[in-house]
Image (cartoon, rainbow, N blue to C red; front, side):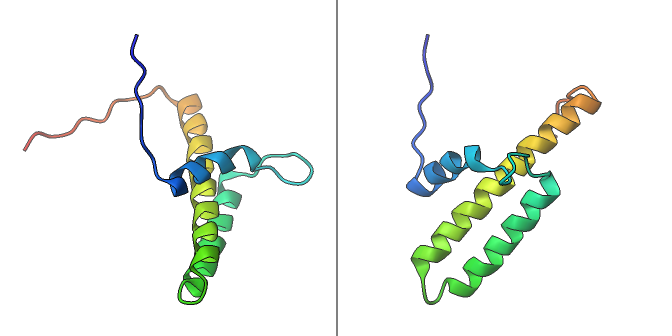
Length: 93
């Protein structure tokens, strides 16, 4: 049995580590739209901070990325519950 290995950058690793901490103070999960809105806010803040504080901008970008990944995962669950998965065909050139 072989186990695939991947090398990812530190930003990607931090993003994946943040995925478990995405609940409200009352322990209810955020809806996908909430996560997308939070990510949008984080990105706009990162954009403003980029010229003056690249470390804070990086943290905000990682925060946004983790929220977008979680939103996509939640949407995967909703989509798979509604209809069976249909493979996407790629047209040969």
